[in-house]
Image (cartoon, one colour):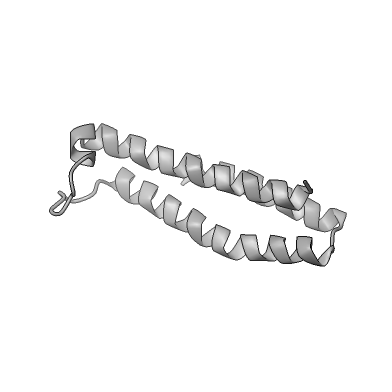
Length: 101
């Protein structure tokens, strides 16, 4: 696989990491029992829950923009050190963003 396709795997792993952080925060703030309910009338979110939710949403939005660009570059056979560097930087930036936000 090319660096571009590996970068898609990397940002997908970043999304999984963000979802795991979000679930962990929800378990700590509420309880696993609360997570198993329908959550029709949840209490107000804490700041940590809001930040975790925003992190997941932002990562999904990033993938929605990043994935088509990478796939088009890969399918067109356009590859360069600049594109590879940008893909690697995007993956690193995603993993840095999650704990910093």
